[in-house]
Image (tube, rainbow, N blue to C red; front, side):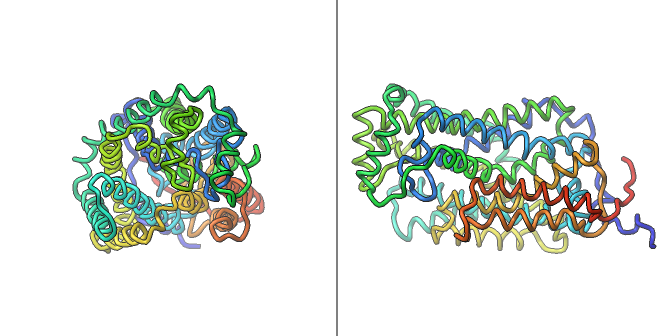
Amino acid sequence: MSDQSSQLPSYIASATPNPAANRAPWYKNTAPTYAGIFLWFVFWQDAVATKGGFLGGLLSQGIGWALLSLVISAAVCHFLFYLVPGMLGMKTGLPLYIVGTSTFGAQGGFLMPGFLMGVLQFGWLGVNVYFSSMMVAGFLGLEGTAVKIVMVIWGVLAAFVGLKGIQYVAKVATYLPLIPLIVLLLLLAKTMGGIGSFDASKFVELHKGIAPNAPAALSTFAVLASMMTFVVGFFATAGAAGADFGTSSRDQKDVSMGGLFGVAGAIILTAGLAILIVAGTYGAAATGKAAVEAGKGGLILQAPGLIPVLLGSKAGLVMFLLAIAAFPPACFSSFIAANSFKTTLPKVNPFISVGIGAAVSIALAITGWAGKAIIVFEIIGASFGPVCGAMLVEYVLNGGKWSGPRAGFNPAGWIAWALGFIVGILPVLNIYQVPAAPVAAFIVGAVAFFVCAKMGLQSAVLPMSAK
């Protein structure tokens, strides 16, 4: 057999851990960065709405159960999707595309999770382009072709800045996330008087009267499953990226606290406020009636959609500010994609690879497909749910340490990902509505990796010089 060290790709051999001197407390990096992700209005706008338009949305079983379902979903994100990648990044000082090679192999890790992370960023960019452009167009009073032009401009600018000017966006992004937080608190102040009067059964009946052909209200379990689909699907790639955040953490406490506040805490705060805002709007007679009239034959279940009802003439400006606050996330998506492609496609000019990806993102926005945010969440969850599941089991089996890169394409990791992805993608293909599909994909990936590992379906660990 040839010397295994010769099998180590240069991108792994040259990897250098982030030194302790470059690390900082959790409240200076991990927590605020993650919190900024969840303050993006595209996340919290779907805290009540459902993909199938079910009667009453996620409030069909009441405010208390919706909030408890949210807390459970937030805990899943922190403990199952974020914590292990974060610990791996902290303990090794190495980013995701390096630590992932213990699960998917030195060659396989090049594609999974490295290249896949870059590709999926353009799905996020498409979602950002669609919703942000719609808000900008609404503020400017644009329609038709003019809206599509805004989408093109937004997507091109985000891709360009992500490639060349991310350091400038990062400075502005420190303060822009305060905009959606202020908006949420303002909307809560306008609606909190109706929260105590909200009645789930009356809300479902109201919805049925407006949309008699809508699917029946979700059961208690179905509300929890739908909440997990929306929350975990949104977070899946960011959870795996916890490895990158972990490289800036000093110790286990930084990793844990960064996740508890930046991930779980931010999820509960932002989506929780959105749930209360929707409930409070329909719990009060005046705003409830106004929301029904504004719905024009439908029921508005997305908090941003209620802004015109609650803020009147100021609505346009507020929605425009939400769109501006969403520009840095669009740039960061392009930035992450560019870094991924620079690593996995070093011979391809980043302007070409990112340009092609941005063109696809813009096309998804123009066609309206990117506007189906929950479906995008399902695809993200199906893709990265099994990645996180397999990484967690590999970490546990190795005694809470990084085992090091494995040769070639590690069979256990790839089998686990394939089986998990199949389960997670079934709802998107309308083959079978798997409850909480991203979590199901995680579980299948975790179990499959465990079984494969116990069967000896793992390639050899390659020696790696200590740095």
